[in-house]
Image (cartoon, rainbow, N blue to C red; front, side, top):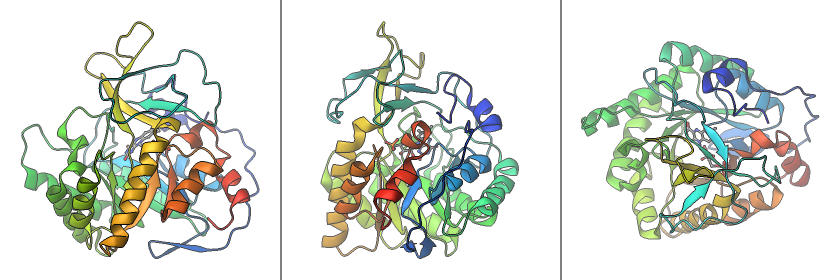
Length: 354
Ligand SMILES: Cc1cc2nc3c(=O)[nH]c(=O)nc-3n(C[C@H](O)[C@H](O)[C@H](O)COP(=O)(O)O)c2cc1C
């Protein structure tokens, strides 16, 4: 495991990733296109695991070709205290409709490291721009040929703050990410572990459209992606996709699902005030795939020019195949590459065409 879940985010930022090597020989793969950029594969890591340029460099050397720099803000934001990441007792698929259902954290190690369901609660920490902007430049310089750097950004609205200010902040952050060296800018409109409205922006089609427009201007020619969460119905997916079409180049979906996570005594495992956290990995694959399939159908029927980039529960060849077969333009992995750093090599060996 490359991220020490028993240590703080700052420890992992300063010392990670924990990887003793050796680095694998990467399978040769034919060149492909991703948002107009040339890539070795359309396999990547979603916003989260890659805390800074060192993480980007190591996972690039492990063969992941689309690398997302963990979400940053226009100001410093402290991380929530430990624990930040726990594994969940969940062997089958989570029913997204069962909002009342609590998930139980595991006490021992998960039985199968290739099919882990886990939960994170970080609160979207960020270094100050004075720190992350030069580090994004280092991350860009560390890329190998055929690799692409996405930088994920999020606005930091004050409670009761002005919506137009938040929209403007997304635009400014897109410009900052571009200036720092991003090749693609991603706006995070969905964070299942923040306890404010910033986690639910993606459900508001009009607001998502305005953010896409502001980011499009700020990114000044770079492709813009929007990170979306789980949708309970296809009508809302259609509204959101129509609202962002022509401004964003694509959407990344889905960003886990918010649930209560409890310990063996039924108490919130992340502590008081952090009852809800994002569930990721194996258990979310089924409903993430449903959302992706619906989105691909809407893009096709409405003739939208959006790429659907899939994420959610990919820990092996079969999971990635589900998404590519559904029409995803790329497949991203959030948590599995931490448990299985050789995952990109496994996927490329099986399917050099991905
Ligand atoms: C340690 C960790 C931190 C994360 N932080 C972010 C984040 O800052 N921004 C974001 O958009 N998603 C974040 N995510 C969510 C992932 O991008 C992804 O949507 C989620 O893990 C589902 O993918 P998976 O099932 O492959 O894990 C994080 C995930 C992990 C594992």
